[in-house]
Amino acid sequence: MSLWIAGLARGHNAGVCLMKDGEIVFSIEEERLTRTKYDGGPLASMLKILEYTNKLDYMVISHTQTLDETAGRIDYSNEDIYTGLARKVGLIESGHPYDKHPQVIDVATLHHKMHASLAFYRSGFEEAVAVIVDGAGTCYSLTSDDQPRFMWETESIYKCEYPDKLQTLYKVAGNKDWLPQVDLEAPDLDIFGKETGAYVMSLSDRAGIVKCYEAVTEYCGWSAIEAGKTMGLFPYGKPNDSIPELFDSTSNAPTPLSNRNLFVPRYPNGSIVNENVYSDLSYTEENIDITTLQNRRDMAYAVQTETQAAVAKVIRQAVEVSGCKNVVISGGYGLNCVANYYFLKELENDGINMYVEPISNDAGTAMGAALWLYRSITKDVAVLPQADNVYLGPVHAYDNDYIINLCNHYNAEVTDATNDDVVKLMTDRNIVTLFQGRSENGPRALGNRSIMYDPTDPNGKDFVNGVKHREYFRPFAGSILEEDVHEWFDLRGMESSPTMMYAVNCQPGIEEKIPAIIHIDGTCRIQTVTREQNPHYYDIIKAFKEKTGCPIIFNTSFNLGGEPLVETLDDALWTLQQSEIEYLYLPEYNKLVKVKNV
Image (cartoon, rainbow, N blue to C red; front, side):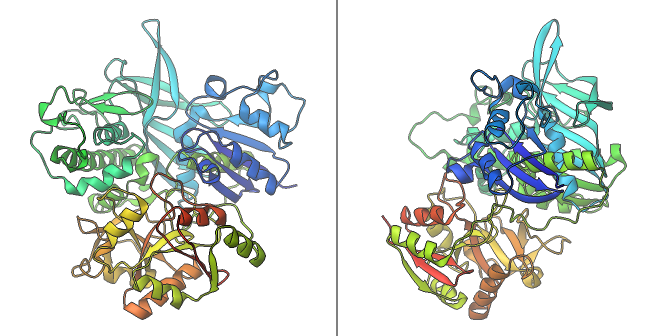
């Protein structure tokens, strides 16, 4: 009998991971199916399970607050909506007390532990210490002075060992109303709610590391969840003496304490920069692009440089308290590719082996929960190899008749094509979209749902940003043949970068060769590609190199600004029809589609 486990992630990065006997069948975010950015409640993703199995053994649900606290309820039966849907479509059995179904396990009290689980099991390490730096994880209800207080975990450290030991060593939880810096002994729980020991939890009234980043992101004019824009803006800034220290340099706390005068946390959602205290940070004129204001740029510079130094301090603390130099990183901050590259230099003399999880956002906790539950049940001690790809989306099967009929629906022309034809289009300065295989899990496009362009075009960055409706300062990535990467980029000791988790320096003389993908600070977010990892994509890049001498192509996610990455072929054609992009390449079918734009 096979063991089927579905991991669900609730919240703004909702999604589902389906596992069979410990192997990932598929993993997808809800927004890819519903076409609504940051869509919550993975209901459409749950229905995808029925394409692979009609019965689950377990459904494990990850969030920051429990099903009883925050999930909607089904009329009459009073089930939470996820248990109710699973029962109604037959994925779990009927006949049990609806609110305590034995096949449904709620791990909302272990949010950071699920981030740690994912990073550990995909790292290739036999043992590791996990560093989780996140916006607001599990909500803890505590009492002080007879008043209920709600705390959200912000930074956590775990010692991880096979088969299922993820021991909490240290944790910081924040709330804007809590007494300053209180430490307490807290129980550590396993996935079934049993106490497995105690650890120190530091309770703080200050903004956590990610909350500081969220505050500056809102200060720059975006929603707190759009921190990637702040990361793109930071190189336009510079050190500014009018900006106070973001963290308390005099503190001896194990993890950095943020400046409580500068940052006002709003747990669990966002944080704000207290402009009223610092007049140099204020600006009241309306109808202006505030990203062109130097104080915004300088704040982006400050929050990037100071938070990455703060996280490096947490990493060193983790190594010290665990005695382990294999470090895995996850949580929202794990997606900061600028910081990840900084760690390679900052920690190079510490003897640390580092793995950064490419699905570090909350969607990854679905997979983390499924992996840990499987190991907890089976006690399987086999060490998984390090994950080097994220092509984990559901399988979409298309035949030629379907492709032709769909293209006719969009009034699109279909012709036979080769890689050389596609390279010719790119070198003639045409954008070509690429659609093949299973979609990438996580936020990076890695050649299955990508927009390709010629990186040698001096105007390429502005051109593609305009077509995608993105801000002027947003950088683009490059996909490079792995065998050529060291000639073009400094990987700081890494052999490769297959999941695009580092913004790396280009080698001398390279910037002028590929100006479309080199950011203002001389860096590029790089994906190395081998034929084993992605044969069609590798061959396209190889053909581009043979024509131009450049082993790199311009790569960005196949979507327009504010939209999810495309998932289906229908999504792809619709996106082209709504944009100025004309070409779609289907390398598995040797087909080129030309769409007439609206």
